[in-house]
Length: 280
Image 1 (cartoon, rainbow, N blue to C red):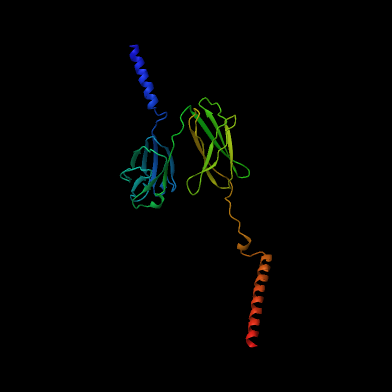
Image 2: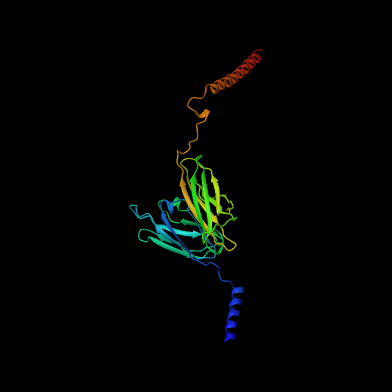
């Protein structure tokens, strides 16, 4: 009996050594609304998933407020992924795609039949990233605060499952841009109390969507959080330049008259000399 148990343990150890189990295999479920306003009502929709894990995307028809049906035939292309297109419409309000991306990169989501708002349904993006680090659970809190100078202070606090601060690790801040996509704006190190902060230039009336991410590692798991803030104040307007004003300043008008007068004087002198030469 003992020999049998020992044999089972030995086989298990060998199997683990040569065929290691996935440390954090998990399914990834994404819900995306589809309408004339784009995917999730935006023309530059982006979502991130991990390579090596099953992804299930459910598309939901969101044009029910229209007087007539506006069906969408959705396809995902790129990275060698070969998936049949799915259709969402008034009669078929949801459709699902399930696949497992095997490599990192970018997939594109697009509608492939003419529809209202089709121009906003050709640039959806699925970013396939490397699997995130597994390990002890971590938590990342994010707070955005408007300052008196209209800049924004983005402050995070990183803690473990017991609430203890995690210091001396980088936290990556990104901001969603007006032209779509994420822009990395800094990666400060956390302090002893687990906090890290970043100043973001902004203007009155601006809306910011900021994300913070701890990539994990050294036995700690990935953590991420996002926050949004709309700054108070009147949106900045570019001032009209002096040359674009309805009435230019007197000094500029005087300079312009002098320059034009000089040009005409030179022109008159040249014409006069030419006339004298021809007459002589």
